[in-house]
Image (cartoon, rainbow, N blue to C red; front, side, top):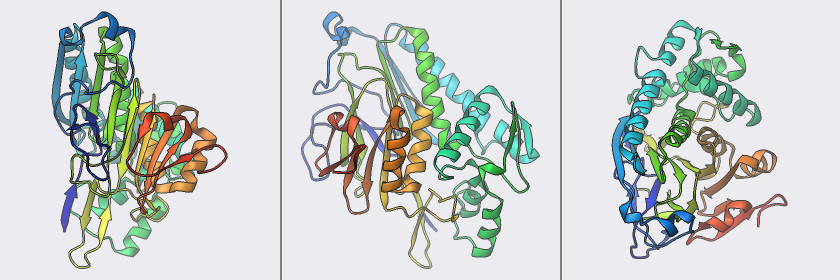
Length: 377
């Protein structure tokens, strides 16, 4: 089996570059897999900071980290930037030890091995949110698909197209509605396993924003694989500009489907181009976002889903959920629950869709359709 793993889903916009089709041409990038943040070529807004402080005089610190099976970057600006980065790295490593299914002594591995267990506060918070998303998305987000992910080889790297009978048997055991949660205790049904990877990085980035409050930072940004979360603004008071990788040209680091300008927001993308393998026998490509209803990679008609929210954990979970649900269901979900998030979607025809409140902060070289309460225009 051939394997491809792309983690260039989001980029921070740093400096000017030349225009090309499919890219929002006003800026170059630092990929989310490494590198620190820098100063922008153009301002997307101004705060009091830029009027009173010379941005070039603000201390900065950054760290590159490998955790949760991905490359991460933490960059902080302020007098206590080094302390904040050290605290962030320690927290990332603590949560990785707690949640990683690749570590035999992690809390999640122990629960999967024993079939039940007492959850820490962090795990309990994530499981509670996962169950809420399971209910509101009609099962599109399901932490019990772990055995299916393992069967496909996405947890081990031993990729294989499952036998249909074996897949069907495992699928029958899945379903977050089969979990029993009583306070801080969780019990799995027979044959079940859970994986919080669908919201763990979003939970982590959100938790780092809380930590940054303790260090009086001017601004900060964390890139956790395909997840970006920004704290306040950049040092010149302008908004962070996040480029969303063009799923039609994923290996081109300067090709974007669009750019969104934000402060104090998470910008989290899911796409089939991020992790996949090719079956050498048939030449067919299989990606890692499984539809919990079928056990097979989701075929929703979407190529990319980006969720923008103040809540990193919510954005992380919904980026997967909406990819499974597809355009129409995702638009309807936003109409019902969208007070805390917005969407940027690209379908398999190369059409881009953005929810109305975010449309003024999003630019693209593609034609953009606006999702409103009334419909899609």
